Length: 317
Ligand SMILES: CC(C)(COP(=O)(O)OP(=O)(O)OC[C@H]1O[C@@H](n2cnc3c(N)ncnc32)[C@H](O)[C@@H]1OP(=O)(O)O)[C@@H](O)C(=O)NCCC(=O)NCCS
Image (tube, rainbow, N blue to C red; front, side, top):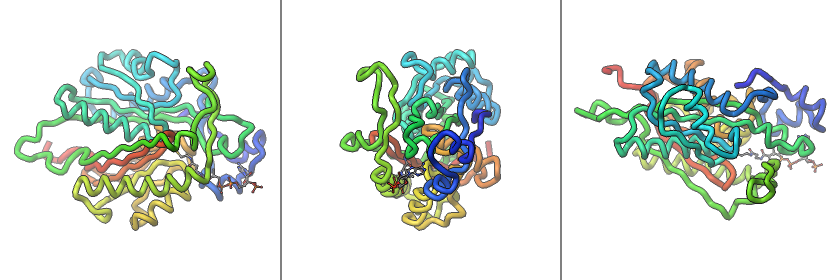
């Protein structure tokens, strides 16, 4: 996450809002913003280096980079190719745009490409500088978002002798429905206005869709992997709003102690939200090697999805 931290109190110095309103409606207390000379690729590169270090693999083993972002450094080329350049490696690299659901879409694409047998080590990154899309005159959206990046490494193994039965990404489901295009979008874009525009959102409608679709996608992903909700060790939901997180937990009938919530510390960081929450859960000993975890996210489009993953590697390796 960028160093620049902004509390609700400091935000209320230039937006007509209060810590009380933001905390009560969203659970957010702080967010981080990129510095003037800091970009999405800088955060993505930092997250990538950390993921490579934690995975203990040589960076040159990475042969695929899939980066989810809505806020690329340049309109083109992809930010993924810039991260590849900064890493000084050669790897097929491209961006995925599914807004806040981007990380789930990136995982799904990466898994499909790896399953074809062509790639062995994939770096999946979620990175966004949402502050660049905020309209500071719109208090209903500007208080909800922050900047950040997170990354994971996926590795492909031959499942000889069933060593990897029930390991890795067990299921992925992704959905999109353009009939809800206008609920959450920017009011500009390359082909509309040659400007990026600002975020506009119908908050109440998005809230209802979020609770319903985040819940249904986890149920669908559980069913696709023949798992039950009570088998999950942990649920890492999209970090947009604490009220959404709690409503989803309630619907799914999962104990809130199993649900990771970091939204208070970084607000909605879009594609970075899940990998940031995942990193927090691992480093604070909430998720261990071999745990069964669920991920879910929703964003503009609307686009949404979920994954069920047995995380880590069998100890026999
Ligand atoms: C945005 C959200 C927090 C707003 O909460 P809400 O309870 O629906 O609030 P409303 O929009 O009805 O606004 C209620 C009042 O608060 C005011 N308000 C809005 N933003 C405010 C702010 N930042 N500070 C103070 N007051 C604010 C409104 O003007 C309104 O005032 P009024 O009643 O006098 O008209 C909520 O709809 C939400 O979380 N939606 C989902 C957002 C999301 O997570 N999107 C990303 C998904 S990827």
